[in-house]
Image (cartoon, rainbow, N blue to C red; front, side, top):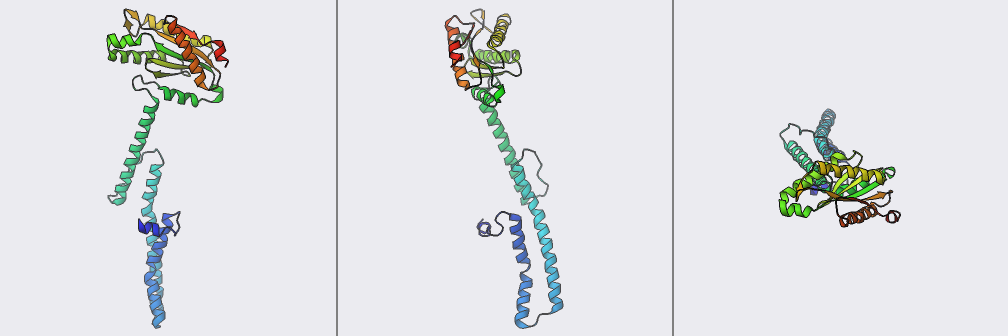
Length: 282
């Protein structure tokens, strides 16, 4: 490392040219030594001088070509770290092969870990749908003309009783089944996520309030006809709050939908409430 730093003034942006320069100087030392001795003593022989010069140039060419070829795997290492394509390490059996394999393995492991962390950061592990962070990331990724529609906050009714009376395993099953039910009944352009606990959030892309409420009412009807579970003999239901979103900060629409959800809960549950018009116009 000390030698590498000490020679950094020679072509500081190109390791290949730096090695070529050092190689050129090193291979010409015998010729320089012979020339200096010959000039100092006057005993230089022209034939030997020409032969030595030609062989030195020939050896330099071989060295430069060899170094260039040996450096190619190192350049491949750098490319491996900066691309996703998987390439097998070359079969050489020397230090380059060991280095190549180590870097290749480290790069592959790092990419896999980054992908896993990315998924974990944006996906709810229980239900398999997006989590709160993932939902907000999807909303942020929408173009300006796509930021229109309705936001709904949904809460499973009496979910605490499901956990208390039927157990947390059953509670987890109900959450996963509810997420599947929502995903199956929504359009592909809509976005659904687990907001937290037993709460879920939906973005109805380009939908008016009537359309969003009708879609939720259809899901609620299916929940009664084909229950995902029962509590006290009654099908598990949900309450929802819906708010129109006109493309401004989505936090305001989510807060308004959450207020409407609270009203739905206070009104007896198993119902859908719309955010107040005055709130939506703020």
